[in-house]
Every structure is written in C-alpha cells, then in structure tokens.
Image 1 (spheres, helix red, strand yellow):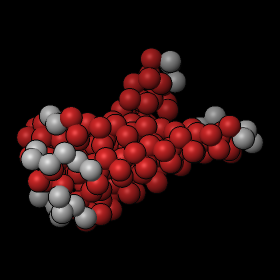
Image 2 (spheres, one colour):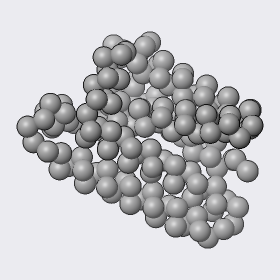
Image 3 (cartoon, one colour):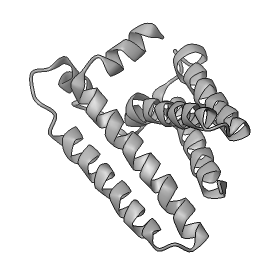
Length: 155
C-alpha cells in the first residue's frame, strides 16, 4: 500500500491531476447543494467544477514526456484512470471534508465522511491490492455516488 500511495503522490503530475479532480468534486458537490437550495450561484460552482474537469483532461493528455509517470499513464484506459486517479481524489476529498467538519464540531457528518474515506482507502489499497482495475473503479464509482448524495443532502 505504501508503495502505491507513494508512487501516486511523489510525482507533481499526479498531484496536479488528483488535485484537479478533488477541486472538481468539491465544486460539483457545492453546486448541487446550492442548486437544491434554490440558489442560482450553484451554476457558478458547477461551471467551476467543469473547468477543473477540463483542466484535468487537458493535463492528462499533455503530460510531459520522458517522465516515469508519463510512461505509466501513456495507455491509460477508463478503468485504470478510475483506480489510479479518481480513487485517491475521492479519498482526499472525503478525509479533508471530514477533518474540516470535525474542526467545526459537526461530528456526525465528519465521522461519516472520515469513515467513507478510510474504508475506500482500505478497499483500494489494502484489501483490494490485487483486484483488477475495473473492480476498483466500480467500487470508486459507488463511493463517488455516495459522495454526491451526501453533498446533496447536506444542509
């Protein structure tokens, strides 16, 4: 597990890609929450999320050549993308939001987010270390749907 996480976060390219996905998830969740409340600035948040998705896709298609990370993502398909980039982004967003809410004394919501972040990390990097990428991505997609449901239902 340590080797997989170290290879993801040791490279600036992977940090930029995961960071763009974290920002996209954050703004998409905020946009859904605002739109549900009837505020139109939610459209601004959704637009910002789309910007970060576009930035992620642009950088993913233009990774500097000659790096070890470029060789790893050169023939990346959807399943490997989900296991390699989306899973760490979801883990980071769950844990960061949980820690922030814990600091703001929203204990129930914080513990729920921390639980989901830690279980996804355990499933992808500990229990499912030898699972194929499609299984990891399907599990990550499920956790992503849970993320949007939690964000949509937050008040």
